[in-house]
Length: 303
Ligand code: RIB
Image (cartoon, rainbow, N blue to C red; front, side, top):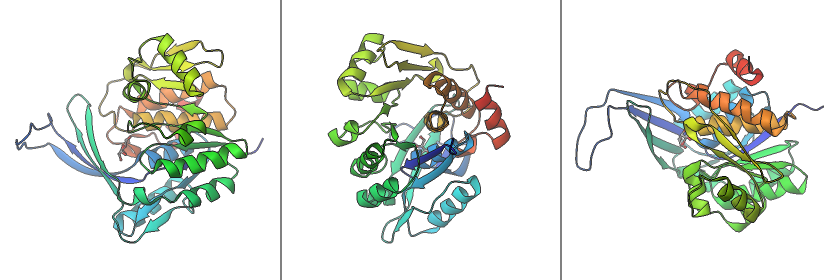
């Protein structure tokens, strides 16, 4: 079998992280505990985790013409992610995310997309059409038209598509129509389904009506997967002490996509994704919270 290969369409940000005992109220000034800068963006995070989970990974994104762009390219190279399809926009900054992390691990994030908004649909479609990836992944931090173009090209050559509809937004019909697996968290699903997503009946009906395979992440409660037969499989998350939940959803999606590409069944891919996501919340940041390659291999193997 060919090497598993995943192509991620999505955002790259630099995360500006403030650790604080609590978030300030409106008009209030607080003294925070610590500041740090990390590589982030849902697309880049998922690409890095897919690589750690055993896939060859290509990433198509758009950066600004600034220092963050060069730093991001260098970091992706260090991580072994193929960044040759990344473009640059000359007149706008690279994406940034301002993140507050409170003592209990809760995060609050404001993303300024910058160059992420300039990702060109034609470039994405051509990149996906010319790539051998069997799994193509997207999120909602770049224009939906760009992800939809990539997904349509992927489906046209028989690849599986995985959409993480984050941050929460209504989905364009063209994007949903080209999505194989939809992987929202509870809030994102509630925004899409317009209803409490807690019951199996809601999950089954939503998956059927949307025409997708559905996998909902439930934070510390694990995940719920709607099987091809409509039955809902719920799996708990490993119990860990949470330091920072930033990027846990990305760890989940990246690992799930990589394991599908590797030929794992969906239950095995789900189990590996839950282990990677739980592990990531024990450390600060998004990519900075991901395991080193040796630990990643153990997590994937379940050892
Ligand atoms: O999912 C976590 C990510 O969301 C962060 O890395 C931040 O950049 C935002 O995109």
